[in-house]
Length: 224
Image (cartoon, rainbow, N blue to C red):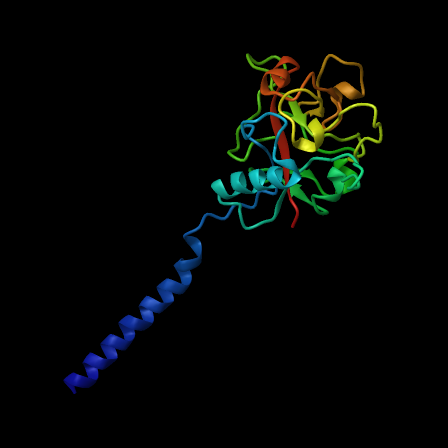
């Protein structure tokens, strides 16, 4: 009788342990439903992001650092056509939406809304850490966000000038199109209020970015 009780007790304890493992095992990793953010910093080499692949890896690494690495992250960047490669449009890289920030606020439900009337501004354009990006009126203005894109989210077809810091491989001379995440600026509207296509930078170094109100930050979107 004692032996049967001992076996029963051991079985009960094992079953309880299994249930506990099943209910808690999947919760050890933080679950972050964020699908959009602005990078909290530049990778360190200005407009040289290692091309689109390097920019994507950076977005992915920042997402993973806050528990949102279970998605495929893409940088909202366009590249222009070369003799051997076609242009790549930022809008074609980021999925179909919807996209929400770290606080669950919807930025846009789909691509048309994103490139039309979206909900992106200084209060909603948060970093992966949930921080507001400084902008016009703050001690440091970092509202210039790298995109290399036209207002519709496509690459520029003007081959007479650099619009993507050499397709994101230059950290010195060159230029890139930026947008204003706070939807404000000194240039004439609608460019001043454009989140993705406001003006060109004066170069591709971090110093050049700072001279027009930027820190080489990017938009990152979850593709799935």
